[in-house]
Length: 174
Image 1 (cartoon, one colour):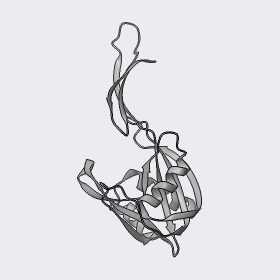
Image 2 (cartoon, rainbow, N blue to C red):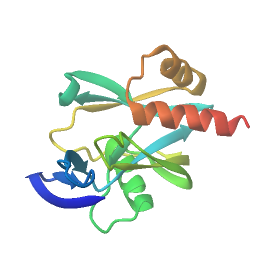
Image 3 (tube, rainbow, N blue to C red):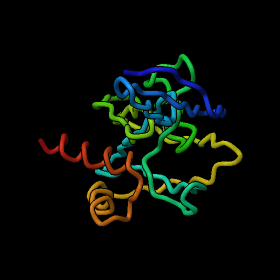
Image 4 (cartoon, helix red, strand yellow):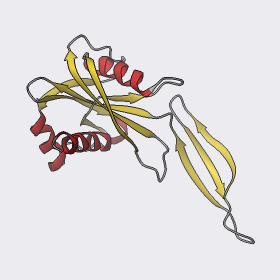
């Protein structure tokens, strides 16, 4: 049973909260720290000719540039579908005329409540990206089968991208 909670850290994008969990009469409660996140989206951006737009994204947390699907954090009060359209355009420059939502999933539920909303974007129109000044992102357009191979061989290490690519690959061939 969940008892008291207290906020340990508040940042622009998430909070760290410590929850006290009752363990029974006469026993000390457990304390668990949880990162509370507003949720995010990731987009499988499909181009004509069986191609997909991935991005190379410099990630400070892991000190390397990762190959990922376009993605972003949901703003307060924003619908995930609105976030997906905004993030696709901001990160890649593409706008989609056709959207499909796939099942959402939790990123790392042992420590994080972030729910990832997965979208497939099709019928894309190119345009200029609107990347934030601190983002070091570049588009990487590859054939779909190469993206799947990159996921399977470990070249793609990002969990949301692995889930998105492999789930869509399974659904599209079902």
